Length: 266
Ligand SMILES: [Zn+2]
Image (cartoon, rainbow, N blue to C red):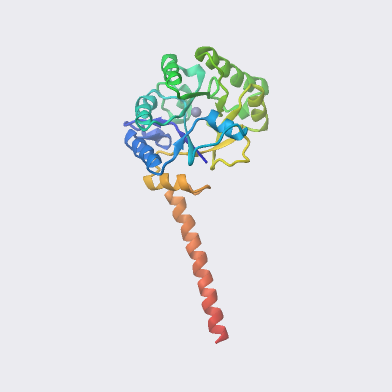
C-alpha cells in the first residue's frame, strides 16, 4: 500500500518551493487517476484496525496525507477531495495555527499562511483525519529527549483539547527521526507515525515509522502512475528511465554472450 505525501497545492507555485507544490489542476488529474485505477483512500484508523487484525482493508487501499496545512492547499485540495469522495489526513504544526510557516523562511526564504483552528475543526467535522506535526516543526532527532517529548506530547494534547477527541497520528517534521524519537512518539501516545522515507508501506513496517511516497512538484502524470504501481524507489520518470536503461544494457550483454557462445561452439 502507498501513503502519498503532499505539501502545497496552489495555482501560484513559488519558484523556491517547487519541490513541495503542485497545481490544483495537477492534483485534480492525480485524484482522477486514483479513481480511474480504482484506488480507495482510507484513513490511518482504518489502517491501524487492519494492522491489529480488527478489520480488512478495501481493495487497492491508499492513504493521502498533507503536511503543514497551508491555507491554499486546503482551499484548493479539499474541494477536489470532496468531489471524488476521498478522505485524507492533515498534519498540523500546532504553534503555527492561524499564523505563517516561519520555519521554512531561513532555509528557503518563503512562507505561507497556515489554516486556523476554525478550519481545522471544520475539516475534522467533515471526516478528514487530523494528526500532529509537532508544536514548532523542529528536527526532532536533533532535540534533547525532553524537548522532543514536549513537542510530541503537547501538540497532541492541544489537538485533543481543541477537537474534543483523541489524536494518535503523527508525521515527523522534515522526516527527522531516530530510535529515541520513535520511542518517545510511542510514549507520547501516538499509534501511527509517518516518515518521509520514500518507499511503499509493507505489512511488516513499524506503524511508528511508516514510509510515504512524496508527490513532488516536478512529478509528471507518468511519474504519478509509476509511483502508484511501482513498489520501490524508482519514483520519477528520470530514475525510471535510468533503471530501464540499466536493464536494457543488462539484456544486451546477455544477448552478446549468447551470440559469442554460439559462435564459439559452431
Ligand atoms: Zn512539515
